Image (tube, rainbow, N blue to C red; front, side, top):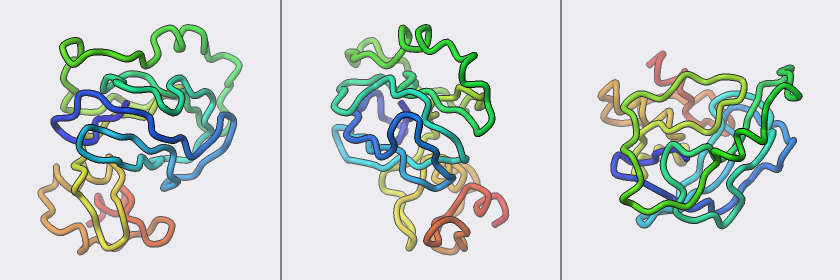
Length: 167
């Protein structure tokens, strides 16, 4: 479960936009997450395949940093992924007392990387729509005051992380 704000400790999987086995591209909408304050979209940061959904739609009180899905890159040996082991440690409902704070830096992605937290703010928007958590984090960490000044190169002019780095 990605941390979509600095104070987020848990969320609800509102809707998966991609199905298991479906390919996606960077910038594609993967899922919608609800918190006690807002409903936010989570976009793909890279191209890949949604191998397995571990937290189905409607799963409530999913702790930040819990594994909610298994993702892989095109060409990865999906057969070597131990989905049963990942399912055992998958997102389970938790109470706020059991939730640990999100790390300050996101872990390095791997071939079985789940949607990773990025510390974005729900209020971060641009002229191109909602920013992905990784883009919002990059903008925040570089102290960029107006995301609208960044020229987006993604689908429909969306701002991608690479656009922020080049800014």
